[in-house]
Amino acid sequence: MGEATRHQALETAGLEHPNPQAVTSRLFTGGNTFFLALDKVQVKYEMLRAHLVESMKVTDVAATHGYSRAAFYLVLAAFEQRGMLGLLDGRPGRKGPTKLTAEIAAFLRGADPTWSGARLAEEIEGRFGVRLHRRTIERARER
Image 1 (cartoon, rainbow, N blue to C red):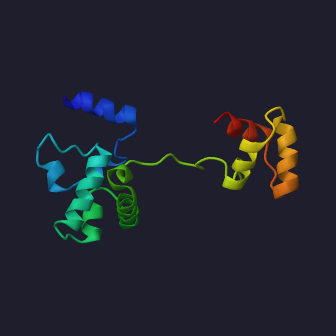
Image 2: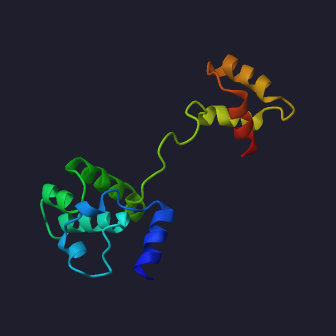
């Protein structure tokens, strides 16, 4: 894969390092075309490897890979939780409805299929004390 193609693929996937010019690690500045400072996932991986395998100080590896010390610990925690997938940035924002509990979802599965979202919203508010929008309920029933 050529460098221009790789740049385009990283841009399309949203995997560009936010500050590639700040990456000063010898791996990325030594002229080796395998290591690309623009590749956020590769930079994060090499930052963790430098600390965990080569025992480099956190402040040093964070600085030479274009991240803050606090960002290093966030990357490390994500990697420990999810492995390589943790090196990918998660979608920002909420991850679904917060008030739609497992108990309410079970109620919806057992509810009369002819009831409208508005009717179910009233039932849920009466039974569980939780106010849900009818559209949230309708989407949950579609799944």
